[in-house]
Amino acid sequence: MNDKNSAEQAYSDFTRSLSYGDYLHLDGIHAAHQPITQAHDEHLFIAVHHVSEVWLGLIVREIQAAMKLLEQGITDAPLKMLTRVVRAQEQMTNAWEVLKTMTPSDYLEFRSAFGQASGFQSQNYRMVEFLLGNRNPVMLRPHAHRPDLHDPLKAALEGPSVYDLALRLVAARGLNIPDEVLQRNYAEKYTLNEAVVDAWIAVYRDTDTYWDLYELAEKLMDVEDNFRRWRFNHVTTVERTIGFKRGSGGTSGVGYLKQALNIVLFPELWEVRTRL
Ligand code: HEM
Image (cartoon, rainbow, N blue to C red; front, side, top):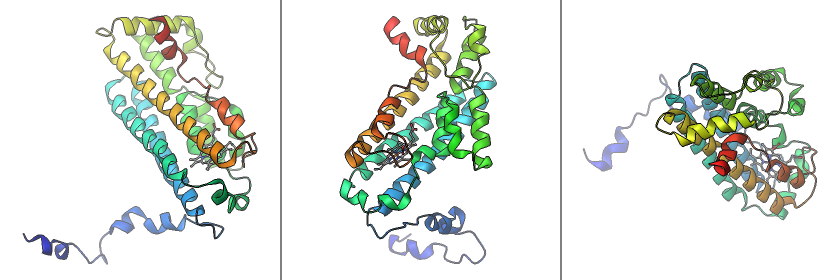
């Protein structure tokens, strides 16, 4: 076949079949891109948020699918899903490279237009945090006016996290995970438990016996590691854009985001590093 002619052979009549744009609902996607000022950089600001939300949606789906399998005692297939989460997180972290081409002056051209809107109100982001185990009922409040967003978040807050499910698997292998951990109130913040540290130490000291748990633990470390990188790049981009001004969502801004850098999702997995 002659290369010159190959484009001419492509399908061109979409009166009766789905085109690329139809399938992907591109009209809807582009219609959602609606700057409210004439500022050049508002387009970039909206695009980076949209792209990040699409990745967050995928991350939520993958974590939920992985959790369903972990609940059934399956450890290999979830690794593939969590690897996809890790790759998607990398894409989100790289998005700051594009956004940081926006200077404080560029941002101020449209900042006042979006009022109190803030990523703080991202349902997808909060869902990721809840599924990974960072629980705080206060975070439900911005969604009170939207039961369709609020109710699934509340269900995630009150159910086991991916780490709770991993600990069930550790217990199922005969390692000691105390009942107070296995039957804890999921809506409360998880804190380090010494017996759980010992159980993970056993896994890391005998990787041949516990290879599947060891791989799962390291995959969870990858997820938390990447989450930290996203948070760090976010707060750095925020500081270089708005300094120490209050956030549009009503928090202290950089101060609030810096505090979040101290969050630990899987405390015993970090502790194992010191104890081994
Ligand atoms: C220059 C651009 C940005 C600025 C100045 C900014 C600023 C802030 C500030 C100050 C907060 C604290 C909450 C508040 O608003 O009071 C926040 C939270 C947040 N932002 Fe951004 N942000 C930017 C870009 C983004 C992007 C592109 C995303 C991608 C989705 C994002 C997602 C979030 C999320 C998820 C939170 C909640 C974090 C948490 O509660 O731990 N932000 N942002």
